[in-house]
Image (cartoon, rainbow, N blue to C red; front, side):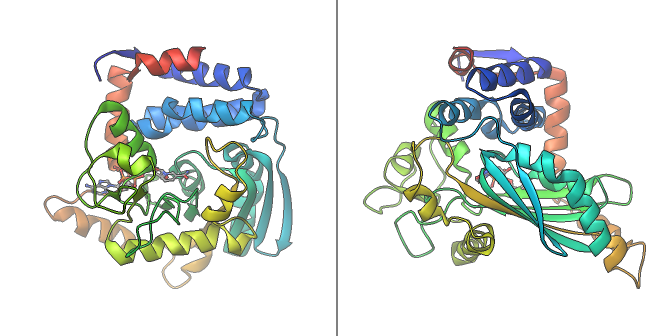
Length: 334
Ligand code: NDP
């Protein structure tokens, strides 16, 4: 990146909030979205930071996404909290459901938050980590628009379909992974296209179905590929089913069919399942053997725990600030 500017984290939040309010959000929605954008930049996850603001703004301005969403909650079964996101971006739903959901998981031992009628445009680790900060084990997934071919195919059918998991450790820290089931998150492919960098082998095909290393060929009529061949492909299918039909929500292919403006994310659901270890581990209340696992992993040279990369990047951002292309800043400030 040749022409860049460096911002501090406070400026990131103000910039995001300002753009979202200007695009039609009320303060509650703007703050909730700006918080996850801020968290992404704080942890060096640029593909879900300010880079996303033009997409958020475009879908607010087109009227597709409701910037004044007031999510509604309903207990549809003893362990199911159903959330109607009121057509808004997902962070306001997370905020609205957080207290009720944590109380429900602690009362029942496990519970599902069925988040519907929403637009997910962020990373998933903020929501699973929020739950693990309250001592819960959490799993989340969501689908998107068809951009990835199933294993063996060449045409987009699945979203990049991320899956996130978080585990609370005894010392209060968390072990969290959050990964696209595509070989690479779409935002990272877009960033490579913007910066003129090629893709590794096996990440995508062009519009003829031929393997390509050109991010533009994958983005314009081609298809992304799952990680790990048919195994990643099956996980992507599971995400489609859990975040879509299980919740009465769209598949990725349906999300695209009903997408009004073709920009930003499409309407869909989020599956968020959490367990309270205090209720599930009666025979061994401490759960200390999880620590044994982590210690054994770390004894092996070359192994690190997922989530540690973000903690390291967080320290770097705290010291050096957030670097973004000047062109992105100009686009957000308009
Ligand atoms: P990465 O491939 O960068 O990382 C996946 C996970 O693996 C992370 O938890 C990461 O943790 C961990 N990890 C990476 N390298 C190592 C290593 N060497 N050893 C141990 N763990 C490691 O993520 P993706 O590109 O697949 O996804 C990026 C983001 O995109 C996710 O946050 C996802 O939620 C988001 N996304 C959102 C979508 C949406 O529709 N809302 C769609 C698709 C993706 P660490 O942080 O420690 O590096």
